[in-house]
Image (cartoon, rainbow, N blue to C red; front, top):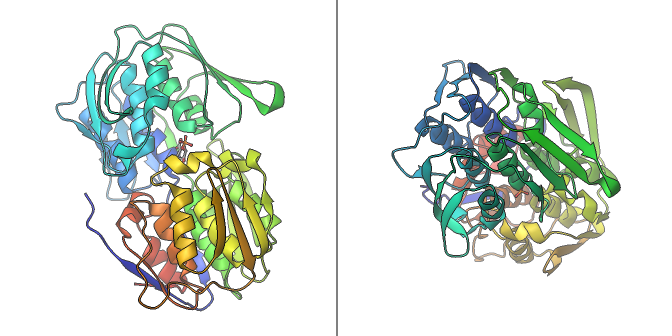
Length: 447
Ligand code: S3P
């Protein structure tokens, strides 16, 4: 799908300006899925128009939903109604998107249709057994490639079985998959999460009129209950800006003194904002203005300045789910901090768009950072000074089709003595299509 696109980030001056970060990826996927399913019209403002989300739109269209983008950038869905997704004529192409795949598998599993799904060289390596197992317990028939991977073919049953499922991994994708399949069941689907993960599916189901019950259990665990066959009615959605995308300019500003940037309308859901808590513990100057609730989600405007030096800290493992996608960029901040930063409980990073622990370890080492890695942890010893960057004549950083690895090293290159070149920036389009223009507009030097 992508042609390789090598990019180089060279040392820049301070970053300054006001920018608009694109819409939240998780909320964008869910708005198209539920909008494509619910009866009536759904209007979506601020949808992320990244390749991952477009995969979701195309898949929903292939299954009968009417989804259109207006010239004003507002998207409109006319949903098929629960139970009415139609069997697509072709294999569904999921590109690089794990969220599209795992959530759509839940929706499809609730329909008595046969669907084939495939993806790019990154996605076809990622584990799908985590969703195959509960879907099979719900009656779905799935024939996957070796190791429970894509390409796969699946057929939903005529009657979905409601199950009680304790999540074996802290994963919002698995939780959401089971809930979306449970929408079609006759009974109540129950999910137990030991560590709460992002709750956008719960929130959005409520916005479409469904009742979702959440009960607190001991030690922060939660029970989520959803009765099947509830009415879903189209609604209007305002997608806030993505805090995971905002983390890249945030760290870029923090590690460059005199920087001052403002980002409006950033999603501040408690289960997504662990990176900001962590950076503030490291000493970062991040201010939240105009904090408010919009469409059921907390949002705020962020002001970030590069005035404070960062110091190394221990990141609590319990915080990992609330910043699961932010460890690559946190490791860049830690490389510039004074002292040691330890990050533990990171086993899930091995099965993201790439093995993120390994890719960060290799790349940081190549840039002269003092970094250690175990199976599920990373330790970075910073001395408060910018790392060297890539040695003259050194190889570009390998990014393995991973947008967040690519963006992290481009941020690092804004402060290193030598420039940082990455082998391929094409995957950045999956989540943050205007990243280079936005960063260069703030003063970075990425070509
Ligand atoms: C997501 C959940 C997370 C996250 C991904 C988006 C979601 O994945 O890494 O980028 O939208 O539900 P896991 O559920 O695999 O942790």
